[in-house]
Length: 196
Image (cartoon, rainbow, N blue to C red):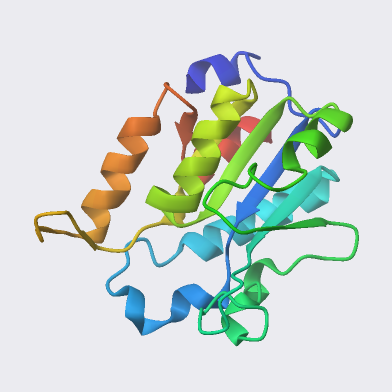
């Protein structure tokens, strides 16, 4: 799929693409989540964001919002805040969501279609939850979808039988379930090299 991009299989310009940054919020710094992989995800997202801004392309920030006052994602809690490294600037779109998918209960799909955006590049937190769900819906809705593997991260998890799975395993298996079925998976380096 990368070769297809390099040979012109994708057209990225200010009229038909958007960078979507999902839930890069201080809430994920809370120790309750446990071990995380890819500690440089935010740096890679920031690098892509800088590149996008230089090109003048569309940037959309997704911000998870909980109605539960005890949640780290409640607007009254510091965790709701988008991390400084990828903080939105004035002209960038910020969309709040309450579930895993950035498309459910929001105007994201409508916004993309109204602005003739056909291609989305997805980054953010976390790989198996909001990033995966958003990526799956993006692909199902017909958007040309790219997920940046080192611009997302996962936490370790237990399954229904109390088996532990480390963060890297969760991350990699999630990417494998999305690859070529819902999205093309690229690294930050591959994305930027293709677009230069």
